Length: 431
Image 1 (tube, helix red, strand yellow):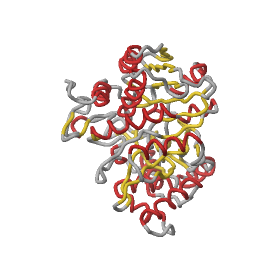
Image 2 (cartoon, one colour; image 1 turned 180 degrees about the vertical axis):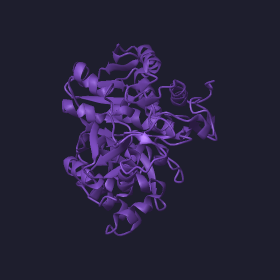
Image 3 (spheres, helix red, strand yellow; image 1 turned 60 degrees about the horizontal axis):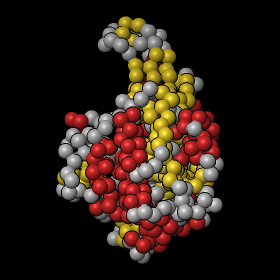
Image 4 (spheres, one colour; image 1 turned 180 degrees about the horizontal axis):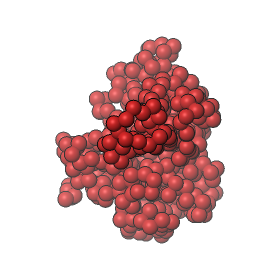
């Protein structure tokens, strides 16, 4: 049960976590409808007009526009996604969909990715409207379905069929940025100004079916296993961009370490090391295997899924190299392919985000970085909207926050949510 003594942002995040919006991918999902209706009801209580868009049964998107003080300024999209990746309850310390508060932390699937940010958006806007104020400019508040499946049944369809929702908008903010890391013994904030390109591929191996007891030199499972191992063991070379070069400069200035070895320099960021290292290079991780139907039957087909994240602009090059790695006997099918993005760490919105953080945590540096994963900003880019990651959280130095994205025992400090709500409300009032 939600505790009334908790801050509102925590109670809203709890409620959202308790909607099981698990997304298994490929159209297999519990659906976001109830969570979207909850968000819509909250926004209506603030006096906003709410629109829903459900292009596929139960895959619900919700939007409301908040009028700003200056109608001449372009609108800002503030968006989140309502789905989460699945959670295996037996692996967790707590029920992943209970929204439990323990030891000053809110636990549950979505506490990090990204029902925390959804709650911060709602309560930041509530702070402004309940005070009888308006944001500086129009805000488009959008909460999408299906982000954890690349947005193909969510933001991609909303952008295509509800483009008018975003009229007048030129910029957007969403998840996976604005959070703090510890660089040696100093705190810094990472502001996301780009995303690697996303390519989800399927490997298909074919062979001759037969009895499991036979000598068999045309085994699809063996071919697939060799291909998967080859990809999984491939270590792609470092390939820096303007954003990752700026990140390294920032880490070097804070730590006093050399920029000559990016991986070693990333180690100064403690628990965030692996997250940052993935932004320096392409990654190709096997994530699923499908083959066979009986212990003593050799199947004629075997498949594997590979999550490929590449430096923007190198997509075709990487796909060609993957075919070389697995050989001509393996078919590579592209399941989802989405763009990479990178924008300068400059401009009025960047300056406003940095200023908002500095007002609430004075003197702490803000460093740009390239997200190794992706967000719904990719879909909005089709409308010419430039997206950033800004879900501001001041975090304990020893908390492996980035490691909890899609991980077990996902949790976020209660005080971090309160901090994020205040910073976000500050930004929306002033930018």
